[in-house]
Amino acid sequence: MNSITIPRPDDWHLHLRDGAMLEGVIADSARHFARAIIMPNLVPPVVTGDQAAAYRDRILAALPEGMAFEPLMTLYLTETTDPDDVAAAVNSGLVKALKLYPAGATTNSDSGVRDFDKVVPVLERMAELGTPLCVHGEVTDSDIDIFDREAVFIDRVLDPLRRKVPGLRVVMEHITTSDGVAYARSGGPDLGATITTHHLIINRNHILVGGIKPHYYCLPVAKREEHRLALVDAATSGEPTFFLGTDSAPHPTDLKENACGCAGCYTSPNTMSLLAHVFEAENALDQLAIFASQNGPAFYRLPVNDDVLRLTKRDAPVAFPATRETGAGPVTLFDPGFDLFWEVETT
Ligand code: NCD
Ligand code: ZN
Image (cartoon, rainbow, N blue to C red):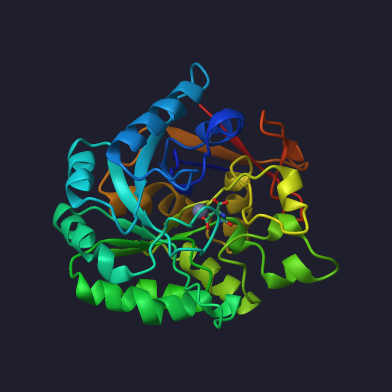
């Protein structure tokens, strides 16, 4: 198979940032993706419906003329989030999900949740509304090893929370472990899980062997190879639980190549080529549309996109720039360390 055509994909977990960075990166998503769930971890975070509306306007203003792209807005859940504001923003059609960051878990998560009991009233309202909660699933306790934080979160926080708020629809964001895969599989139709492109490709050796590779550092951090294999198995399985959320997270290169480097991989430009490569290697190219274009809309109760994206396998490697120049500085693209032959053709 040298060419495949899939419904235009969506990105169910994307960081577009703001200002000059937003202007510099938005076309990379809009070129291939019809819609994206937009992460709200700006500084300050997008907490209220009014803030989400203003952010949506800034995103659309930054979109280059002639490009179509629908930002699906999220609110950043805090301990003081007002259930009525959430309901109004959801009912108006503006807000599609809320994002739960445990305080301190990742980039710009200081305003996140410390005491999970405090957010139960909002979660109960979300369960009534059918609004998904996108969860960054890592505990932040200093005594828990960073490689165990996802598995411990499932036991200590996620499972108890789902029992406390029956009917709450949850997306486990960017799962990185076989524990995450197993829990997501066990959760029924109200539990989904996004998988990033980079976690299908790298394990923790890629970050640390032969010198530290800051552009492979993201959160949750990549785990052992056995976990990567579990993610590839889930992504290529066709099971409705699993869908693409790139977690493409641009940072200026100098803030990653730094004594205290930021977490995040920038994968928007080459994600579809990378995914075609991974799926082909698994003999699962026929599952790519399900993972990237169909399961996400089904979970979010939205239609699959009408238009299509065609991927063609070239004889020579497809060229990608090493960096995306932006007004906020250059951003280094995720480099898988191997050549890519699948090229996207948009119609
Ligand atoms: C994200 C960012 O930079 O905003 N970083 C990352 O490593 N994934 C935050 C996040 O999704 O955890
Ligand atoms: Zn993210």
